[in-house]
Each structure stands twice: as structure tokens, then as C-alpha cells.
Image 1: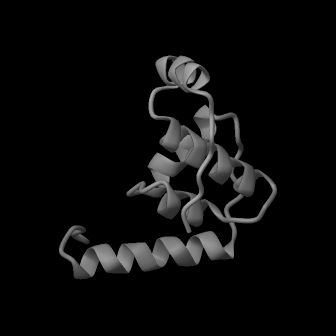
Image 2 (image 1 turned 30 degrees about the vertical axis):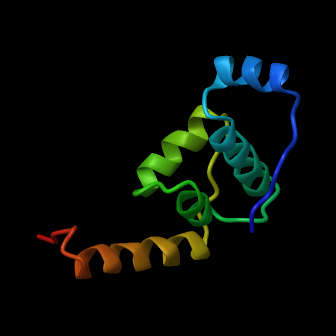
Amino acid sequence: MEITISLPDTIARCLEAKWGDLERRSLEALVLEAYREGSISAGKVRELLGMNTRLETDAFLKAKGIHLAYDEADFEADRQTHEQLQREGKLKVR
């Protein structure tokens, strides 16, 4: 799904100067709010924001002042990611 937000050019330029990429910032805000209210898991946060590891996701959420809740769904998502990385040869297990 694609979502379009209309902003006056002057405001968009001002926000872009302060925040950088407005599309990314908007996506992050949406994902953070969905995580805060329990609509998505940390695994989904990682997937939606294109992060590679749980640690990267944890650091992102921590920087935004959000404490993590790690549940069974998160564990399963991490397990699946681990298996996928192993199959793709991107993760070596010792």
C-alpha cells in the first residue's frame, strides 16, 4: 500500500532541513506508534524498516525511548531469520 501525505512546500523544506528524509521519518513514526500500541512486534519493526538484526532494532527502539517487549512471536521471527541467513550462507554457526 502506498500512502501520500500533502504538505505545503515551505513546511516540507523546513522539516526536511531538520529531519532529513521525510518519507523515512514518516514510516518510522508510523511503525513506532504501531509497536507502542502493540499492533506489531519488534520483528515486524525490523522487517518494515529494513533492519538486519534484532540488535539494530533494539538500538533503534531504545534511541526512541521505547522499552522492548520480547514475546513468542518475536522469538519465532528471529528463529526464522536465523535459519534464512544460514541457508543463504550469510551466517556461519560454530
